[in-house]
Image 1: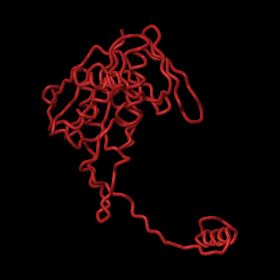
Image 2: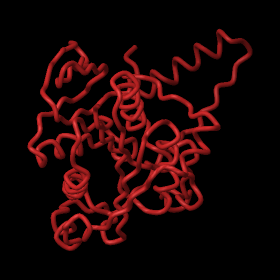
Image 3: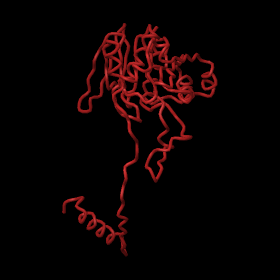
Image 4: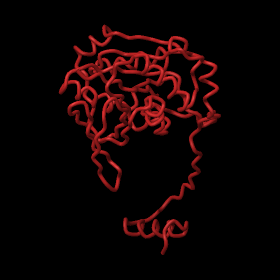
Length: 263
């Protein structure tokens, strides 16, 4: 029986994200939150391993009431339980502090064989939490995995290193981060969606994990001052022509005049 913990983060649905034209800041009010795409693929990989070898899949996340709602999808997909670190004092911490909190939560859950996560979340693209967590837990780590196999207490992973593929083996327990290409997440059935709310959900604050919220925040060394969309100035050049050939010629001349391409 294999016990797998999957790290999941809820993010704003990027397809619904809009920006204030005056401040260029994102408008997050009322925007639906969902599980970050690559994290969802890590969950799908864990569920597939459970279906093949038996065991339990535990979803672990940090957030608030909106996170709890977003994580119902994880339970509907096939996670057996959800553990949520919900503490207002921990909002806004960086990846190092987040990793410390998640490491404490993983230790408290205990009895695991594997920790899976996405290589990055689509809101920050930092790719730091998985490796930091492995170091804090003093566990071997595998990154950029696109295929996983369990064999007699060991994990075999195929890694995508862009210019070369690599196959590695590691003893368990271990921490593994996966890439988007590993799978296509399943769509939960209506029956599983209805069952999701009946699955166990456990919430902890920093104190329940044996942590001081102030000490965790002190470990956070990065402060995000603001987030805004880049300002794009358009020249609004209009190409007027009688034929498509003439329009193409004028467009090419305009592009060359801008120095975008060499003549």
